[in-house]
Image (tube, helix red, strand yellow):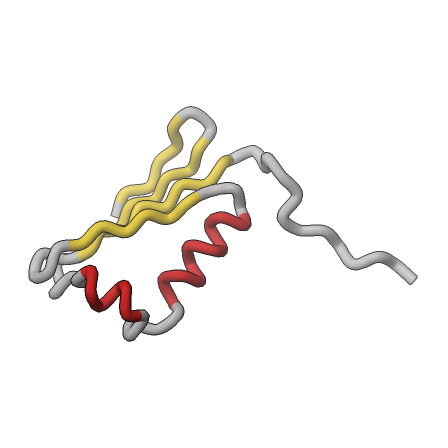
Amino acid sequence: MVLGIDSGWLKLTVRDDGRGICEAERASGNGGHGLPNMQRRAADLGGELNVTSLPGQGVTYALRVPLARRRAWWRPAPRR
């Protein structure tokens, strides 16, 4: 795992050495909704989550989100 800051971006990279994810498995959606949900949450923060993998060689998850909020992703509920 590597955590750092680069040009106003928070970057987190996590690698494992497991079985990996083949493209057919990822495209079929048989892995569940976890990865698409994580990518959507990263996008909600103005960032991105990239996943690279080769079967039998593990997975690398690279998250990048801006340190300064570039768009309003959260708004408090109006007071009554």
